[in-house]
Length: 375
Image 1 (tube, rainbow, N blue to C red):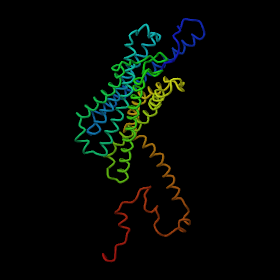
Image 2: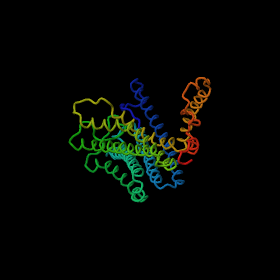
Image 3: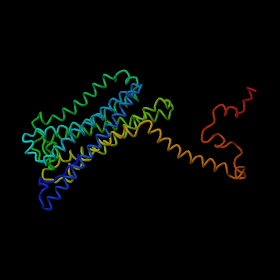
Image 4: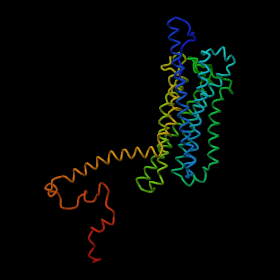
């Protein structure tokens, strides 16, 4: 979300600093509305594409992946709707929490939603990475143990874990606090009272970093397995095409999560473990704004990295490099005859290729002379 750390001066004053404050607040509200609109549109479009693919898919392993991916997009969509509405509500009351939230009910809901919709995409991304890693490395175990019923139960446990972390401050009587910008609520980060105020944000950050680490390890193992299978030609292109599509999406999700959420998770740890009199080098709101881009970029992974789009990209690369190889082949055939005659009389590499492709085995056998014992 976008917000600024300005004061509560009204927009009607003619004093210049107040006018600057008002313009900054209007800019923040406009940016919040744009971010919310783009996020809702992107996630709705991605959800439509995933639902269409889920209805047409016949591969059981990919159906499980699409179920998790659709759940991730739905979570991002709800995060934009709920958190964006709370931001606009706070700005509508000019960030005067004492007037509209004297009992801190809205702040508690706001902080819990920030934590829940922050951890849920990270947890779902790691679950998707583990599911694909098992599906590629242990396909028999995946087909027998990870059924549709088990995947739905795992999905519910993932949301339950994120919800438990979100309500933990309320259960421990450490409610969420209004941050310095007065536009959002989060953990008690400034001058914590005791070890619980330090433990709660550390738990949030460590769980998020653990989810990112699991995603990196599983996606790396899956990519190496698929690459090894391709090099050894143990799987046909038809059998691994949907695996490659999913691993491209997982790698993109992992990259987006690391870039968007990595600074916030690390900075929360720094703020929680620093000395009380040590000044903060970066605004917490800045890294929170970076994290919100994760919910905007995630759906575009499924919109852009589909099999049809990837096929068009590969065709463009093949056309580009194919034209270069065609020009090189044409240039080699236009070499003067004398320069060819000065080379070795044996068959060179160009004699065994046809437009960059090797001749069939039958053609090579017909050229090879028969042994004397068979004559």
